[in-house]
Image (cartoon, rainbow, N blue to C red):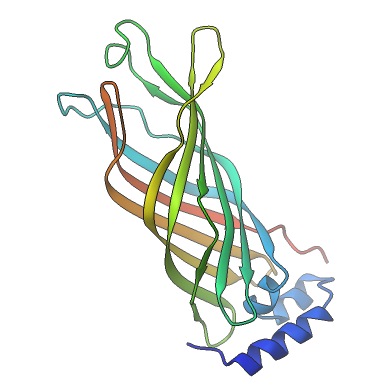
Length: 216
């Protein structure tokens, strides 16, 4: 559904005078109005980031799935009705490659693993008729920062990996309790990292996020 520009402008003007003092008041506004002033959402469970890993012989490697440890995303609605994903940051657990794959007698530990967007992403979403939700798809580079954990406990930064032009679907809603909730999903087939005896492929992400509850 397209929302007309006059309606968006009127909603934006109304937003300037709003004060979200309670959950009831927050629940009466639209998602577009809430996002007019930008919302930071914390990554929450259940969230998932996964890859497949193989050695040089093509054998799958076990126990390389990271756990989502936290992070946040920032959403905003523009005056012309676009949904803007200003930032996504996902903090992941260490990834351990078992002994004998890269190092003969020791595991290889990748640490400080984080995902982020290469740029902001603006999409033209479908706004629900009741104004409570929006959904859209765009393309953006997803960057992966990480480091190698050496025997002395030092973190040795590795080159940032870039997943180019990943399709990112965003579903956002304004819940009855006044919180903004979002689900960001992406899936990219093919190799995303090839180093020494390890190949990481088939990236997948399903991240849930929510704003702070509105206090009565």
